[in-house]
Structures are given as structure tokens and as C-alpha cells.
Image (cartoon, rainbow, N blue to C red; front, top):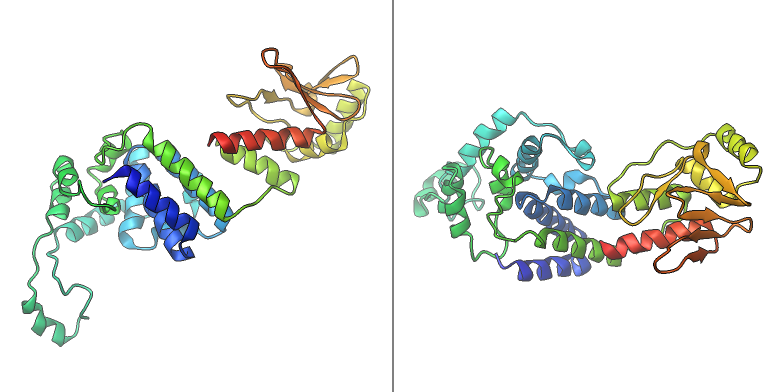
Length: 324
């Protein structure tokens, strides 16, 4: 597979294809990433697609082979990501038998043209079935032979590959039969997520939406919100009233875990004050002034004052999106 040509076509489909074409492309790309051992990149792509389209993830596993592929990959990974909660759990032993039958079934040129009527039996001799070499390689567990046979295919059938139970652990471990390389999966996921953002432009409106967007980009979960009693006690202890937007943040999430470029935001119980400035992070790199400004302290490049705490988090989200 020509990885660059594949990604160019995938981005084009996401930007300009109709919704069924977009869903097919995202589902196929997610499987490409997962079979390359990049489960985290696949999860990030699917999670973003689900948020912006608001369509059920069953759209990405709408036939037996694709549903089976995800089930085998999840087993090999040792668990299901959160986005897969909507998918119906499968009997993997039964699915393994069904997939082996699928791989070894002889393929006719008339497959799908005729139904199961007596006419089909009469004319089937016109196009007798033949083994499919690509499927037989999977049935034999010969990953290297499969890779050779699909080397020049623009869109290889990675669903049939991933659904092969004996091979799924090798894929998850990073066998990379498509020879995509270590950097391509993150580049692919990032490019397709950027295309989804362009097609479905949104900016978080409410505090829950903003916090959810940040945590989605980070791959984290939010702590529970602070109670009104927690906020009142913090203000009593600090001897000051917290800015309204910062209060709303704490009522949405009582602090946030740290990120590679952003410190841990403290819960209400750990807030500190120093000369009228409230320290809201650990280490003390994010401060709230008496005027409601949020200051990011950076000793190397200079500190930045944002007009509000929300403006600071919106800036942080923009940086996360750009880096993705």
C-alpha cells in the first residue's frame, strides 16, 4: 500500500465525500491504524469522529467481518476502549470458526449477482469458484505472504486480516504488515482528525463542552465536580471571592490532571493564596489575579496574561488541537 496516496485519498473522502463514504473511510482507516499496532491512534480517530458526527459506532462495524475484526483486536489488546461500549460483544470462538469458513470459501465471479434460487445452481457452473490466494494466506496464518499479495493494493482488506484471530496478537504487538513505519499512524490520525474538524467546525460553548474537548485531546477523564460547599469553604480559607468563570470550571471538574505542556490544576481543597493572587496549579504556574485575569508563568519565554480563566483554557485547547 502506498501510504501517502492512501492518506491523500482518505483526507479527500473525509472533506468532500457524502456521509456514508466518510463513515466507510474513517472505519477503514481506523482498522488500518489498529492493524499497524497503533490502537491509541485508532481510538483517537474514532472518538473524534463519534463526537463531531454524533453517529453510532456501529456504523464502523456494520458487517460481520468488520465487527469480528474489532472484536479480535480488542481481545488481543486485553480490553475494549470506551468508544466500543456500543458494540455488541461477540462469541469469539464461534466468530473464529465463521471467519475460517469465510477465508477458505471459494470465490466465484457471480458472487453477489445471483440469489439462492434454483437458477443460481444452474448457472454457477458458468463461473466456478476458485480459492482466493489472499484469504488463503490468512487462513494459513501466513502474514508475510498476505503482505506480499496485497503490496500494491490501494485499499487492502485489513478487516479480513484483523478478524483472523491467530494473527491479531501479532498486529497489536506491532508486526506492521503494511510497512507503514512508526510515525505514519499518528500522522494519519492527525490528518483525518484535522479534516473532520474542517468539515464539522465547532467551538465548545458550555463549560462541560470545553472541559470534555480538552480531555478528549489529552485522552484523559475528568474528576468529579466541586460542590457549592467546597467552593464556599475554599473562598473562606483564601479570604477572597473566586472569579465567576473559575467557579463554573470547578463546578464542572474539580481540577484537571497535568499534561506534557500544562500543570495539574488544583481542586478547590488545595487552592492557595499569596498576596491576593490565587495559585490554581501545581507547580505554581497558573495564577488568578484580583481582576479575574489568568496568568501563565513561563520563566523561559515570559509570562502570559489571559483576560479570564476560560480564555486560558481555550488557548490551551487550541494548542492541543494544533499539536494533534
